[in-house]
Length: 350
Ligand code: AMP
Ligand code: MG
Image 1 (tube, rainbow, N blue to C red):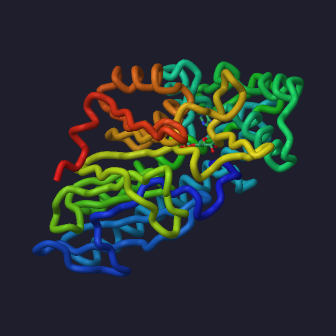
Image 2: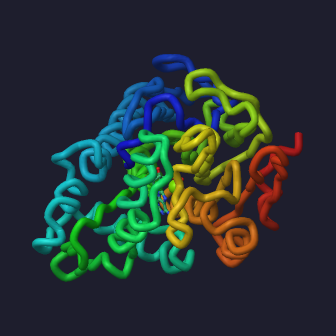
Image 3: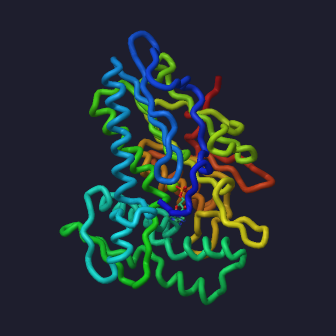
């Protein structure tokens, strides 16, 4: 996760159907719901809802999901100087650094999405993220030499993974991995799997606008309703904003990448926190990209990738993938909505 995320500014999606109260409540005939309440993790808000046959199971599901979010945060946060990813960032040029199965899995996925997105998705983007963050603080655009220097430390071909020894090595000094575009999704997937193992009849895990739902919802077990925020009035992460449309979901993950809440400002101009590796500056194609799929890891990576790729290449990538649909909104002031051919199936027609 990027150290630049701030609490309260990353909610792109608002759950609308689940009437969720603190603690446990009755839903439907015999099912009960437990939930975590909204709390801060990975620099943003998370929420867990579990639906089960009895209170004890429901609470246990929430607990085990929460443990998984903590685990991924402890491994992959770059706020935490002791996390695995911080250790990799410090040592992987000098030596091969051994990592957990979880971190290795995410890094392999990241390389896969780098390939399918022709380099648009790039977890080695750290040096360029840092450069633009500093530019925002100094309110001054980075110079060509600085950009070239940061670029020399970015590129997935410089990230060397060895699956035999489960180690990571950097080919170039000064590289920095940033898993902010994929780790939330991965944490959500782990949490959902944990809830299923604990016997949940249904559930939802949300982190900073990315989420996954499965099984029965608290709304009498009917499908889950998930609102896509209107980028013109997205809310501030505490108060819900205006809803642009509502998705009806059963077993699905939804990830939203937007430039309307997180950005760097230089000279009055906004630059997205999502960096185009080829342009070495903030992506400009959309005000928001929502990807719907089965896996939250994949949806998260794809939403970031499509943000960089733009509507032509981004949408054709989505059309090629069987498990992914997208709803994208063009930048201000047009806010034109475009959706992939299968996205309509998820839209609430009632
Ligand atoms: P998301 O909110 O999932 O779209 O992720 C955005 C975050 O991903 C940023 O805050 C950075 O930490 C990181 N990031 C920025 N640009 C890229 C990129 N081109 N590929 C992968 N991750 C990126
Ligand atoms: Mg993402």
